[in-house]
Amino acid sequence: MQDAVLAMLAKEPSHGYHLRARLRHSLGPLGESMNPGQIYVTLARLEKAGLVVCERADGLPEKPERKVYALTPAGQQRVAAWLTEIGWPKPDLAEFHLKLATAAAARLADPVELIAAQRRELLRRLREAQQAALAEPAGSGAALLLEGVMLRLQADLRWLGACERAWSKVDHEVEGA
Image 1 (cartoon, rainbow, N blue to C red):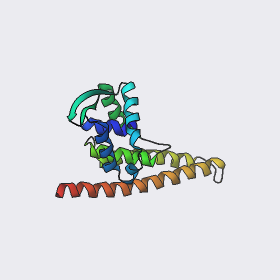
Image 2: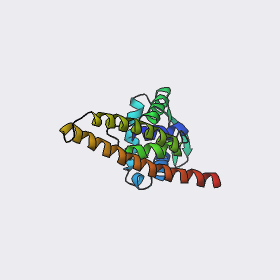
Image 3: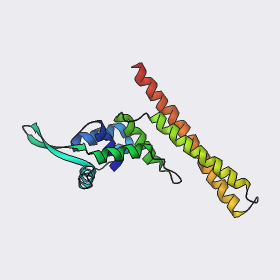
């Protein structure tokens, strides 16, 4: 969640309520389950870690002061690192989807390019597993384990294909609008 909040702040400084609304909009059902207080706890942790700064901003008469959060240089570096990070051998599909959605919403990266980078890494790992499997005796425990690794990688590659089709469709809809 912290990285998604930082990614949204990379687009523009914002107050907690607006950040939560943007995350909910970007993440759909995944964002709907977000606890309203979670965003403020996350912002406080990010501020304590030196990744965001908080300033008071004039608000409406009924809400005279609001805290507006912005990235620090360290926060900007963390967002850049998060966007290029490849999550394997234990990919968290929800985390990767969160990365795609927030990167697109904040206009930080092209989701299709993030998918392509992830695909390249999975293909590299699949080749390594295939080469290692060829060196093992058929039916050995190591060969069985490597088969499981290869099947998991193939499934993840198929899921990335579905992601690419969906995000390519979104890109074409945006271009046509």
